[in-house]
Length: 183
Image 1 (cartoon, rainbow, N blue to C red):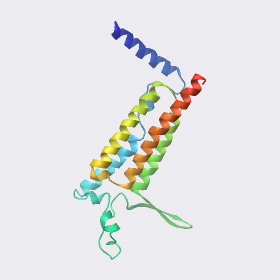
Image 2: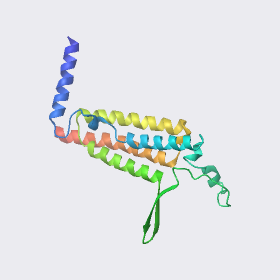
Image 3: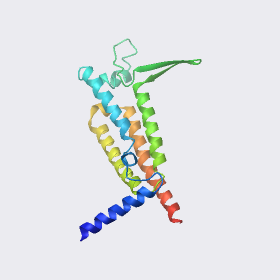
Image 4: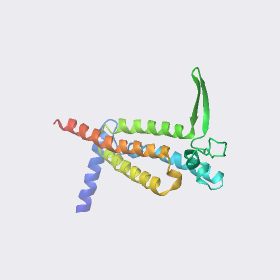
């Protein structure tokens, strides 16, 4: 008897969520958009590492040599695909060079924008999205701490955006729920 009641509750929640404008339990509403830049970073990173002979510096670069000042004296320092110039745009003030990391961060900012817009709801899909966003944040933290290819400033900024997504998402949802309850 409890199995049918639970199924009825789930159907009732799904049907009320689907009746809300912009709501519903669709994959787009539940999917954490901050996962897109993480996947993009991983794909570009691992392609760079595999084509660069298996060395992480092919993607991230040799920051130890750069920080030690060895690059200034003409020594060969690997810039890495993440920090190397990808696109150069001429401007009246000079040339503006975008790196792979800059473009990944732009994608992450766009994903964060869509997450913030979506978090204004208080339905089931919004709550599921917040739970998955926490999972993305935890996975990103583990990758940053344990996998060398993810130990970069670009990925740290993606982690910070994921943290903002989680914190602001719950805050905005709580305010929206309070508004819906009329308190």
